[in-house]
Length: 373
Length: 119
Image (cartoon, rainbow over the protein chains, first blue to last red):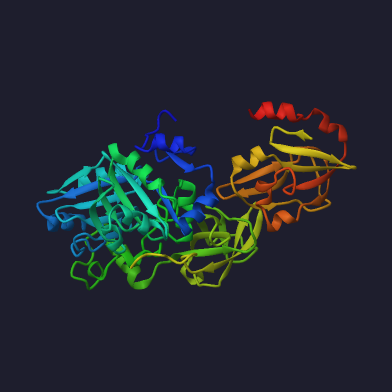
């Protein structure tokens, strides 16, 4: 793994016995000795600490917030101008066909906008921002790690370091001193649990992570459990459930496009693929992302074709994420089917090892979200 | 007990051979959540896919270690696949096979050879 980038927590992962894998050009922990199942359940019941330093942290700065927000709204179909200071919002870059180029978090940091983008897309995202935006400075932040503390105990743990952490609401952002470290904190995450994402100066990241891990409720969690947690939470993984061929409406992410950017809104359209996406918001899309519950115990994973009838020749769609849901205690999956079939309770068939096995279309998420609204 | 390079163990018992996978293999696979067993009465040839194991992260195949007929499968694994993790060489056995040529197991590794193999 000599060719891979290391995050500032690499030595700590190795010391903790993590199994390291290559992910988006980084050596990342996929699991620790306790295993994916235990890590998953620990996060749901206590608090899990994730290294997400591979993700891109980007600063977008103009003459003022309005300049930067106005510029970004040409690329992202989200109400960024109307985002209050110290608040965060989920969004995505779209392409001219209405497909999703990446999904990201957008924070109003007062004098600038802070973005967190996917590891595998960050080089493209930054080049794209620089090429497409004028009058704003786009800077990749390379001297900070990013940690996520997720789970019902996260609030108590972080509040012991700074009481202000506890008073943050879901999607609030703040600069907080935590154990003497200057941190950029957001009350968010990607597990369906309450929790925080914490940007920490690289030089202090390991000591900070050790401080958090010293708490009896905190355990290190790898990418394996991160994937099963986000799947149970019905959250899309870029490159799997969403990609350049998937529109936000097909993906069930229309909620992230605020009224002001839709037809009839003050700043309707003006982003790549707006004609396609706004038409789909009005008329519906041809296909939709759905939850799928395989009958029986066999997990059905990404790539399994879906059929309307057990002996049909032509598939109607495909599973884009699937596996075993440790909290659900059963196999779970997400995938795309034609909108006419995307009705809860509809039975479809997945082809697994040459056999057609039934699945039931279900609403998402598989486990209820636990956010502090 | 005999072992294959695919991390199966074989334990002769009367006129059949009990087959499972080693603790080393279950550790590598991680938490096992599903085991698809063959049907009793199936005749299998050596190196034929006979069992599918799904861990939290991935699916893997187990190959028949010898020629023979499946005479019993561990139905407890259907309800409690984690038995394979918890008691790999005991309650987590997969199937019993009646060998068509019992001498086929002679060429397999013994415990010392297997331990050296995974070391």
